Image (cartoon, rainbow, N blue to C red):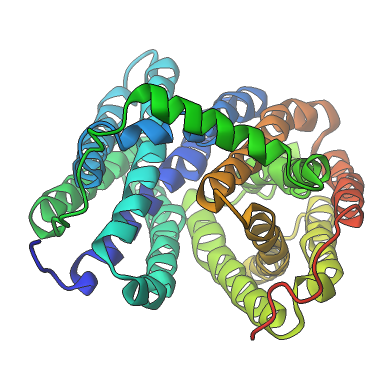
Length: 421
């Protein structure tokens, strides 16, 4: 095995895992909004981009059969870099929406496959002690990728929009910068990623054996206690947020005359990618500390309130339409802090439900339901907003929080789960 310090590759590996997800899920929404795609089309078509993360458990077993985790990781990075360059070149074309959407679709599959391979490589490249030691580092650099994507890159696009006066050109340059960064990460990982002896294709395992094990694992998931209630929780806990996430950026972009706040692209990059992410991260950290002291059962309801009640800031913003950036930043921070704190309960419940035999595979199925719960409501969000207008849409979001409360009320959780031993 080629020895390299984990510090040399874990930060960059998880930075590379976060960037394409942000590009597909968030930067695409901002770009299409600035290129005058309607909210209905924007939400519906970008909502479909969640699908690869929904169905990735279906093909993840076969990654073990073909090539190594290292090969899959670096190959997907190359494909993602090429895809980002493809988006940069097709933005100025006449049929940019169809072309870029097709490339985003391919990127989404590559990114989902990269997630599977990179997480598997993390376990092969580190011993048990190192895995525990670096789990916080990988999360931190994933967050840094989110800040770079939602914040710095969108701010760069906004600066280019202002300085050039050409919106398609500005976004084309932004994606070219992102492509160059990703190709550089691919080249770096080609040389720096270790080559664990255990990282090899499972030639001794046949596709038939994998399929039998897969169906057995899948069936056992649905035979677990409270499986139906758990699936309802996975699908509906974030029912309001799934819709709000798609319409947050369009609301900030649209002019005041159309019910929005009329922020510039640069301002949105700062609000969403910096202030919002800081609030989200702090909420998540405090959520983890709270559960470690009192257990998930004790903190479930405070977290349900935290993920639901702050959504009301959007009702306020849609009626007041303030022009104070400080006030807007404060509202977004409050909403994202509450979301980060409340989301802790969701992620810990997924771990709780997946525990037992086949816990890795069962957790992957849980995350597929999580992605499905974001995908379907998000696809309809643009149509609902254009039908209702922003004010009524955000009131609808508050009504939808009843689904969050209802799903949480059905859960039965071990009072000791999550407590620090």
